Amino acid sequence: MDWIDEQLLKLKEKIKAQSLRKTMSLYICIAIIAVIVLYISTTVFCDGWKELVYAKYSLDIKSYTNIESLVKLELIDKVILYGSSIIKEYSIVIYSIIAIIITSNMFYKNKIKVPIDILKEEAKKISRNDLSFSCAYNSGDELGEICEAFDKMRIQLIVNNENMWSIMEGQRQLNSAFAHDIRTPLTVIQGYTEILLKYYPQGKITEEKLLENLTLIQSQLTRLKNFSETMKDIQDIGEIEVNQKLTEFNLLEKNIKENIDGITQSKDIEINIYNKLKKDKGYFDESIILQVVDNLLSNALSFTKDKIDIISEWENDVLYIYIRDNGKGFSKKELYFASNPYYSSRAGIDGHFGIGLTICKSLCEKHGGKLSLNNSTNGGAIICASFFVDKK
Image (tube, rainbow, N blue to C red; front, side, top):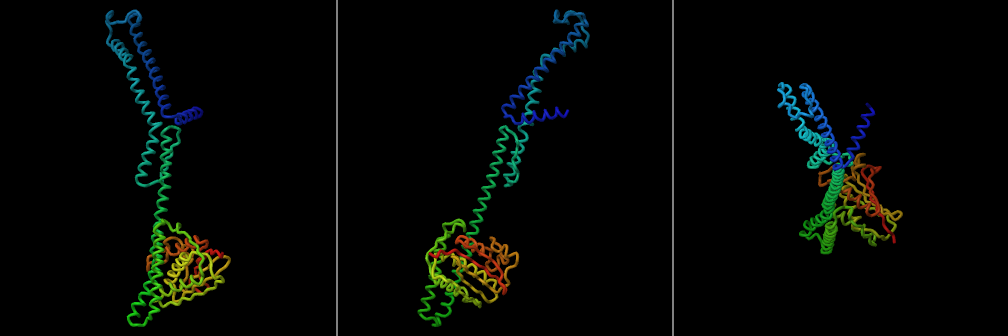
């Protein structure tokens, strides 16, 4: 029995691997052979009963075709002869109908039902945006190919959705970066404007100081304009290009100091700048470095107690800028997750949405450096932003 079961299983798998056309042709051939065999068997069976009736009345079935005209038959013999004639005449039609029904049902059950159910289930899942259901049907026929194509479509939909979400996430980060990074120039403008509004009407600001403040405000407005022009044509933070130009480090320090003066006008915080650079100039993108420093300074202002140190160093063609505060510092969890998108221990408070450090990390990497988070030995957080600077 095991051998028979094994052979039947092999035959079933072989039939399953055949195309629908070949399988249907095979089923039809088997049905025709079965109908012919059954019809012949039925004909022999009916003729056998007829012979018994003829023999009962000592008549030869080959010589007499109408026994009722010769002798008076018993009722049972009439039923046998009439029934045999009817069965013999219509059995071919009955067997054909039964064969069609059985063949079509078997063909549907063995070749169509399973893949159709799989495809219907997959269609329902996809309509609910559930792409976890695998449309797998191991068969060499056309429906197997359709299931395979359907599953490839499902996988492609997953890829497309991932790409779409990646684009949307990139756009979300870009929008957050834009909103986050215009805050510092606006704060600087606000600081210098408040000074002018407060002291100029009292005559406490000289014309020279007035012109200086207006120039600083104008520089911040120009920076905002350039930043907006840069951001409007990109779809992701990673698309921001680094434009390195030969620039004096003193000019970079001057711009950082001007931003600090504008930001801290209304804050009672001590900010110290320590310049340990041994180079006069280098090739770097000043706007990117200022953007990183602004973000780090903005975060430090939110967490420090009353003091921030900004330290600049140069080593092996790398510019290091340290922002150190005397706040509570980073927790172990924050040291690991703080530079991830939208992570912040104060997310949503005071305008902090966990995007600043992510922007800084991306910009540092674009400039050939990196962003490192640590805690100072004296307490507080210390963040190091490094940038590759060509010294040509």
